[in-house]
Amino acid sequence: MSNTGLPEWANVLAVFDTETTGIQPDTTRIVSAHVSVLNPYGEVEDRTDWLINCGIDIPEQATAVHGITTERMRAEGAPAADSVFEILTKIQAFLNAGIGVVAYNAAYDFTILDREAKRYGFDPLELPRPIIDPLIIDKQVDKYRKGKRTLEAASAHYGVELIDAHDASADAIAAGRVAQAIGKKYAADLAYPATELHDLQVVWAQEQAESYANWRRSQNLPVYPGDGLWPVR
Image (cartoon, helix red, strand yellow):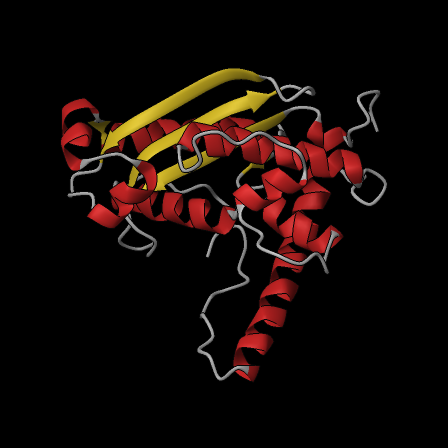
């Protein structure tokens, strides 16, 4: 542990989030994205934001979530292929350096990024690691807490300010600060190197998905295929 009270992995974090056209990974397109670095005090350094012309209309229900209209995307958005390549390159550089990349519900963003890479003929991130997913970690260290586990709920629980939710930069930065807050609160339980914490999350994600699937079966609800694969489905 460092003198900040954080586990070593939480001292410097990259953060990543996307806003998209939908939720189905194979057809969804990224319309905005954010990548930046947080220092040990949660301050933002080296930030990059993308508004992307994804080439398809943004459904109204997606615009209602993140506020980006098709008109604005077409007028201001950068070419999708260029943007996806830039995002891949930036994240790969952090992973190569052993810096954990935070994404809340990482299997969503990294699966979409994987499909976007393939769509434009780029090599996807090969087994991206180390990824830090505050959703998976929070469920592991505080299993029996009642209530929602959304980013908004986790931010409120851990005392992290989240203004302008569903903006890629606001969500990414809040997720990184939530990861640091969890790291500080549960420092003794999470005192692993980033790569080891990544490998533990692979196991935890599977266990959490199996537990949720069992509950859904008990309620005669359908079970989601591929749930539990992390960080790419």
